[in-house]
Amino acid sequence: MRRLLLALVPLSCLAASPEAVAQDLDATIADALANAPALAAAKADEAAAKARLDRAKAESNPLLRVEGSVGTGRIDNGGFFGITADDTTPLSLQGTAEMPLYAGGRISAAIDQARGGAKIAGFQTEQTRLQTIVRAIAAYAEVLTARKLDERYAQLVNELAEVERQAGLRFQAGEISNSELAQAKARKAEADAGKAHAEGRLASAESAFERLTGKPAGDLAPLPDLPRTPPTLDEALDLARASNPSLRQAKAAVDVAKAGVRAAKAEGMPQIGAYAEAAHVRDQFFPDYRADSYSVGIRGRWTIFAGGRVATQTRAANAGLDGSEARLRQADQALTGMVIDAWSGLATANRMVEATHLQTAAADEALRGRKLESQTGSVPVLAVLDAEREAIAAQAALLEANGRRLVAAWQLNALTGNIEQ
Image 1 (cartoon, helix red, strand yellow):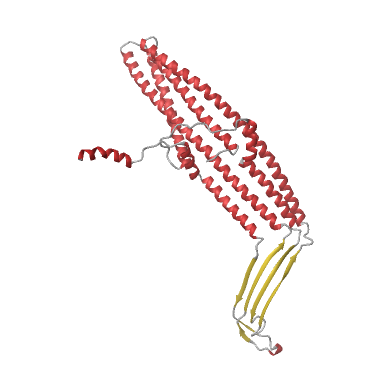
Image 2 (cartoon, helix red, strand yellow):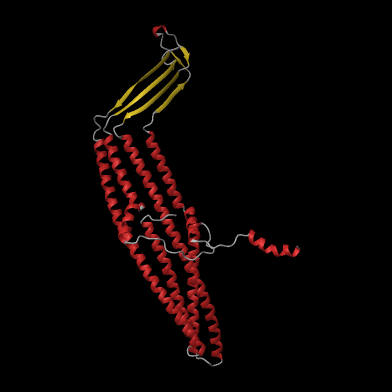
């Protein structure tokens, strides 16, 4: 029994401790979205815009207002009407209920403006979310690339350190010339420089990753497969014009400007509302004065002449509408250019991945050949290291090409609003 328990201890420890699982891209994106201050600010702006919309809608609701005052004082009418001076406690209480019946379009225009503002804020939140996702993918790919390069350069440095040591021994024994020793030292110095550059790149990549996600970069899973992208450029452009948050922001801004024109024109229209009032008054004009009253009816207000205020405000609103429409055209043109660039960038990245695959395969084959030739003594060791350096460069190009292709695909989907995360 004791041996059985001892045998089970490691298994129970393993069951109690969660296995170390490499973090994947989806988890990185989720961390970035949860940690992004810009996204939190955009969501707060969106909440404020929705509150302003509710405030604008509330203008069409009834309004109940109560006003009152109470104090102490003295009234002396100089004996008028035989009323003698006396101390008083003036009291006034009034309740008013109002209901707008016709506002000349002011309320509906304000609601449309606030609704457009809420849409703009929502589109800004979506745009920030998409940008954060693309940045997270770029940071993820950069860490993987930098780690692989650092690993390969560390291997190259160790190999060249041994080559340099052996070259020094062979030079002392008179087997090689001073120039061959210098070549070995030059290769080692070059590898050290490459290792230093790789270390700096890795430190920068991991720092950027932690700033973006709020967590250090642990073990990361390999790059995932490419997401689905629009099959044709025309389809990508159609999707972008229908779903891109920046373009939809510009369209909503035009709607807000149109509502602004209606609001400006409404300032010259009459306003009509129903009301009900009740009042309770004591000691206001002479001691023991009492008055209770109520009234119901309709109130109206119409500014017949405003000295040009309405006209100038309308001209300003029309100019704002022209500007919004121009910015919409500009946004459409800019989006078209960005989608075309992203589409071309993805196509280029696909070709680069294919080319670097061939380059890597050729460099690996050349390295294997150089190692076999070195074993037979037909080529020096430095030739093998040169081949290994070329293989490292080819592998680095392949890693970067894969990362760029993944980022390009996600960037294209971000422009078309085609990211579900």
